[in-house]
Amino acid sequence: MEPPAADPNPLRALGAPLRDFVRRAKTSLDDEIRSYPTPIPRCDAQFNYAYEQRARLAALSQRIDAAIDDDGATELLRAMAEFSALPPIGESSEEHALRARITDALARAGVQVVASPERSAIDLMAGGH
Image (cartoon, rainbow, N blue to C red; front, top):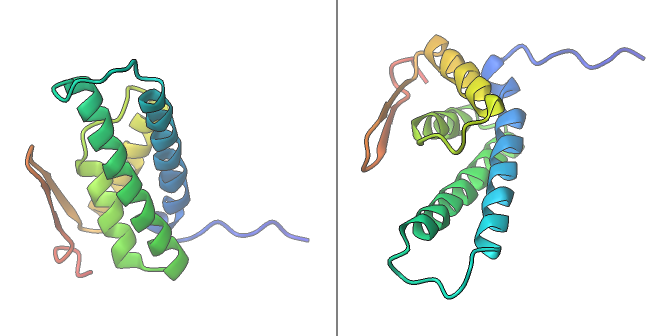
């Protein structure tokens, strides 16, 4: 029996590693939030940032899952571009390598990612998608 062939679509091939990374990052934030010392004042910037980041990762994870399950190339592009526009989650070499691979694949697909502090804009039309 032959091993399965590698996915020839580099963007789709990055879907599973992105999904796995986002899930692990969210789980790590879940643990951090669960073990945060109480009581937590409403003005605790570090806790609020972790809480907001966890919500962003949960939503992104759902979009990635839906795109992979439905074989939705455009939605997967959007999820990858959204991930690229987010501030770094940590400082791991895994995240840096994944971001570099996704950025390279998006550039080859003609997808522009513009990040701003308020929100990110994703131009999928540039690559004809």
